[in-house]
Picture 1 (cartoon, rainbow, N blue to C red):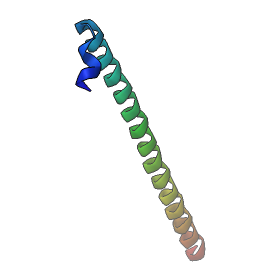
Picture 2: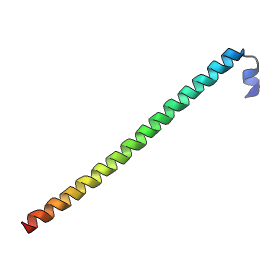
Picture 3: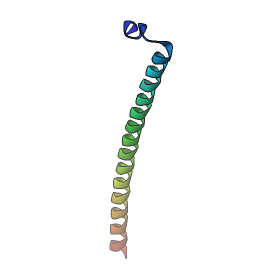
Picture 4: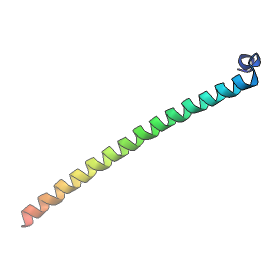
Length: 62
């Protein structure tokens, strides 16, 4: 990797590193968003099941 950057000017190296960091942060954000959506989807499913069970018990009692 060092030989790759040796022939570059300092500003080119810094711009390349900055670009890599931006891409990394973007990818991490997408992964976090996907993970959060999966968690919310699971919680919504559990909540719907809990409501369905709860309303079924009320109709039997009432």
